[in-house]
Image (tube, rainbow, N blue to C red; front, side, top):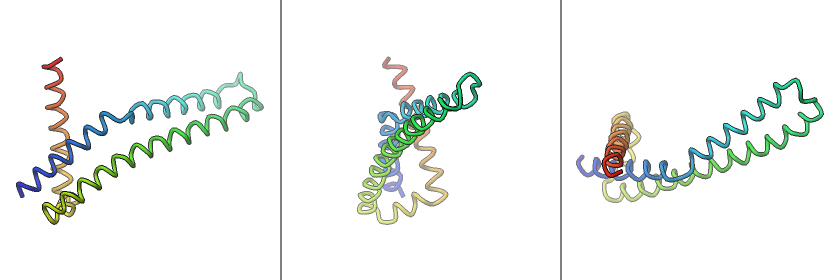
Length: 127
């Protein structure tokens, strides 16, 4: 059980760092901006239907491209999780089963939140 907990700490730490270091938040912000632009165009009475018909496909393409980029970042995180779980299963058989159980999900959430709080406190102290 201690080995499984240590492996879970490693997994959660790596995944948290990946989420913090990959530009996932920026991709979400860009998607939100494109969505806002689309809603402004659609709801504006000052823009003719002709121009709406010309602008909306461009905005839809930007939204699709942004969604594809976001999916790519999530696939990178998923690949890291899969690789770590495969290695952890070699060290401690049944680790993936534990990880997908209710206890494992609760523990991984707790470890991740704990890691992020400690990371934030260390960052605040070291400047």
